[in-house]
Length: 360
Ligand SMILES: *Cc1c(COP(=O)(O)O)cnc(C)c1O
Figure (cartoon, rainbow, N blue to C red):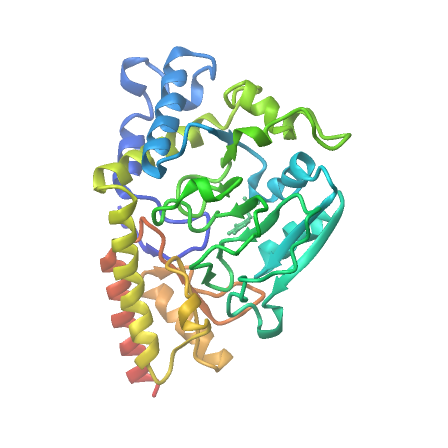
């Protein structure tokens, strides 16, 4: 068996310990004679898996009792619709446009009401986070929406926007569990888990309870109503059982490591190795305003498309996979999620140094 260093933006690298444990339990989950993939979602065994996963997540993120944790499907993209359907009582909400995912959410919200662009960093290819200290938020807005970590462009909100008392909704797909968060500052935190937490197919939504009501937009499908999912503890229909089981293992892996404080330290250390190199390199340049740099997604360029392509090709041959930048940006992007070992980043930087010398 040989594993590469996988810098994919998502689906992405998972902890080896988790994959090994899942492999060991594949044929016979803890003496029940079947795989978790094969068991009823109503069984006692699965009930324990999902309850334990939720309890561990609550502990890790210190989630207050007045928030529900939902394990959903449909990807983060389905929440682009579910959020307005459940929250847009006044049919008006504010969106901060910091990249493609925020823009898609904003466009989807327009199907349901008035989505107002409060700020945008489109003028500089989303390479920074706009000033959000005094946004044109009006009294009739139902919520303010952000994409907290911009997977494609490599920016992250280091400070939450001043929402002037309005509920904050955040897509945290690519920074989920990468550092501690104060859940009480949000109305909804949600993310697809395939970036930093588990396999594709699960979306986790953490929602303040008073927002979970029958008062949703007319025509909201039963499945997209948060109340349906909350009333049934995420078991209204068959949930993505195997994905939830793997997420549970990742929660335990983070807990065993010391929790989100430790995770953050490790992520800062890793990111610093790469950013420090980009800051001193004559060939490779980071593309993001230094104060807004993501700990998770690090885009960089040489400024020469042919050289970029050569780098990606040679890196792949050397065991560094998925370094090609998003199709909309070009260049390179190294996603260095929780499960990317420090050694992987060190070796990547060593490879970049060598490439720079050879191609100077
Ligand atoms: C990947 C990603 C999405 C889209 O996720 P899907 O699960 O494919 O719908 C949305 N938002 C962010 C921030 C992402 O990184």
